Length: 517
Image (cartoon, rainbow, N blue to C red; front, side, top):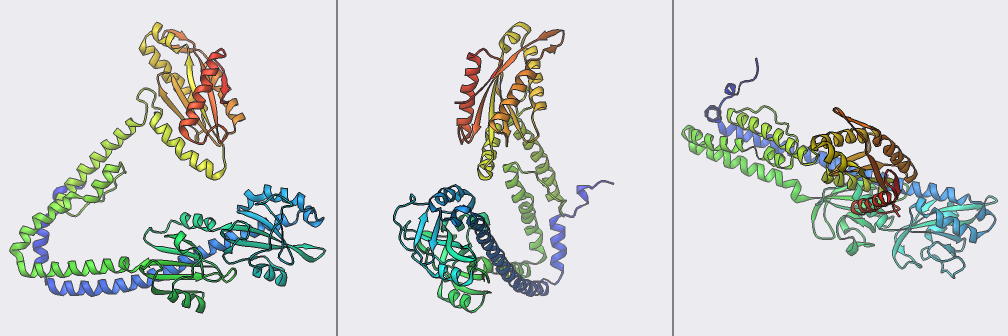
């Protein structure tokens, strides 16, 4: 038998039953249990924060290891072995993108900078500002990471990753990559810590290299004194402290045993205690109210609680955003009535949102959804260094079909054309009807050459005859193609250039493909 809303007890009946029970002992037990639970949660939260700091330190070491691997590969260049530093300078410039560094340097054993990708080859260069990393590399013969220091060429706070360059089993040079703090600011943002947390990356001297808040103010400064003492004493741990910007926090920290760089994660104390304080206050107030009012007040309060519950605030908020609601069956009759209403409203809203983003005639995404989808894919293509092409299609001869055979036949022709375009596209591609007889296709991870071949196939496919009831119609299509990143890096410019290319295709005789210039 299906669920019946009338089977649920009302809030008033439930509260009447609860008041009969001994309220005060339950409240006391609840408070004790909550405090005990809170204390356990605090211990677990601290352990989780330390583990998160350890994980972040591993991410920092992975960045160093990736740089060291790239430098070691670069150090095998025969140009270094033969002393062709000018030739190696060109090779280093080409390798910058792979190393993802600010610059690449070659140092001799005395710390003299022999070349820097920041300067033309042969230009006089200073000695390295901080020789400690070079001395470590010469002593151990192993790669290493420096602390933060003021770069003699850039004039900025930088750090370096260096590897030895051996010639005939002897270390002849040190090959170094330099980085600004922005390298780790990007890594910090990628880990998406809560915005109120204070997170810092420190170098081997416990100075701040990256920080979630006010990095320009604290770059290169030591961590707070209490944290500094603990980090010097142990590699992992936690403590209550005050951050450099005056926020009381529970700080979890971890230092790498390899690079000696560290991470400190500070959780504001106010966030840790707010839940306990609010819950205990609410528990005391509820207990006093229940004892003072008695059974007669429970019946009155029950109606108000019912109205609060039926509001279902959070699902209503989610409803506005168009999210799919998944509301479990609730305990009370009134709440279940509102549950049914919210679910129905959610279904209607989602249908309206779908209709707002899709063409009603063809079912294809409309201009708004197409624009939004390309914007998202452009961001991914930019990050992953991938191609994306936009095709702008305009039918040739559609107006003649529409005027001769009527709008119904024209609509059928547009649906047929949409089907052919959609069938030719990959699952990862995006096709759209922009309006009238204009269509657009976004080819994800497709080179300009492949996209032009695809566009040529579309011209052939769309130009095939159409059976429109008892009539036979033929149209062709002119297509303009624009390419990311060569032609443009934003949606509007890509569409505009593809549109211009399409008009050039029409001017050249229609039924053909032109690329943006």
